[in-house]
Length: 110
Image (cartoon, rainbow, N blue to C red; front, side):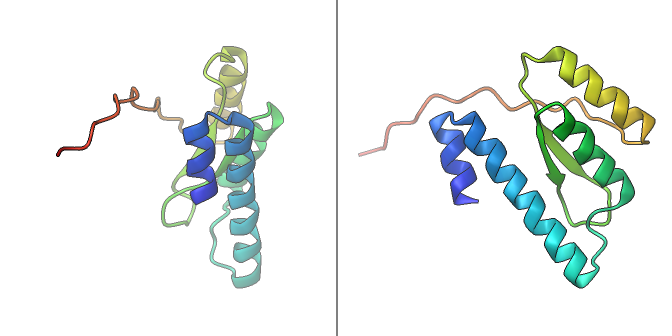
């Protein structure tokens, strides 16, 4: 988590995607070892569709297939449309979520 936060703070897009992929791989290993049901068929398709266009994706939330996230370059509208088409075909319902605008840094109070 700290490495992902650090990559985000540095503006290291490739590093952030790598951390999301690492988290997804670790969740997949845990799911396989313990059989928690984290990766449902829909979540696998969510991740596969995102990875096919160079994005990073992983399950999110408590598990059980109800939520996943994918990080894509906002400027790559063609890829975003492609992922949405794949998700819709797989029964995945994308939400139009975007990061909040960056807040200005606050100065510490004396």
